[in-house]
Image 1: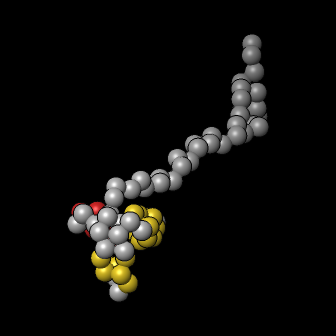
Image 2 (image 1 turned 60 degrees about the vertical axis):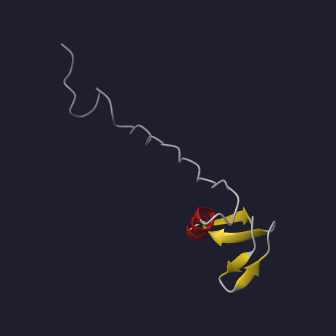
Length: 74
């Protein structure tokens, strides 16, 4: 899961380490959602991966009407 940096609203025990209020901590996305539901951190923006470009394969050189199988014009 991607890691998210969140700002704390209240102090709390974060997996064995005390996180003071108004500090930024880095947690995984699942933990960030849990902390947000419990009102311990501010809203955060999750950076999404960029959409990949759909690239079309190059046209084959042998494609067309004039090949070995093409019928001659009359």
